[in-house]
Length: 349
Picture 1 (tube, helix red, strand yellow):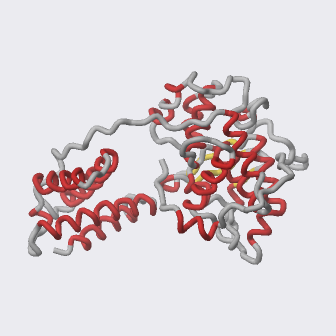
Picture 2 (spheres, one colour):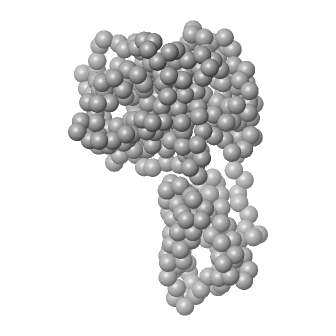
Picture 3 (tube, helix red, strand yellow):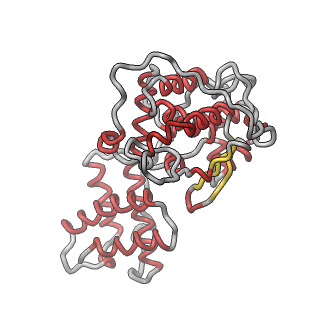
């Protein structure tokens, strides 16, 4: 049987009926294509989906284990199988679901990496130390991701109409096209204003695009580019460990909760579907958290997050420009065209 054709139909269902994101569909396609290869090797060409049994699936999982896959990867692949076979059963393609009793390995949940207030400040300063126009872009990008706690996919798809610098907020279009408004810290507003005043126009060139964050070719940044930008500047700032854009999202959630923000407001701002996801950061209170009076975005500066929406500066008010070191590195960071080829796509949580 051509297993790939059945998987392709399932992926189309995810896209049209479940409104799954391209990244979700990409992940399912990779995991299920690997399963299809296993079926081709171990079942006859005349086999159908009904020929797949619980033993077929356990043999596949055993093969994954023998090949050295981590428990988290195996658990993800099993979840993909369960979703596929549930769909096949609902469609009447199979009479019984062989994945019902398939057990996933226990995955030890690791606490997310959090940056301190000092590390956040150093990261922003490292971004500001690069050459223009990238300097203004990277500073604004990282400030916005941290300030709003938005996901990478939301940041790269941010459009000019989504920004409201007069009210210090931004519209985020999240999973399932759900929209939410998130507050911008004053420093993020300043960094955005600085970037939009000239750097973005330099990057856009003759391209007529309304995406906010652009690469040197005038196109919107890729997910891979944002991941590498974050890592490059974290390394320049001397921050140990793997720092990703999602690290900024995790850190912002923890910082807001540790400064006394209401957990449901944080849930709304971050776009968490489940309150338990937001409360996870509350469990880490007191662990390398900034004092309540200290802003996680700007050490030594009061956090005005809660006042940002109702006490915004008037449109005519001049916004402070983020400080930028005078010296610039002799070797500029890697170009965006190279970034996309050096880092594989990752999922957003």
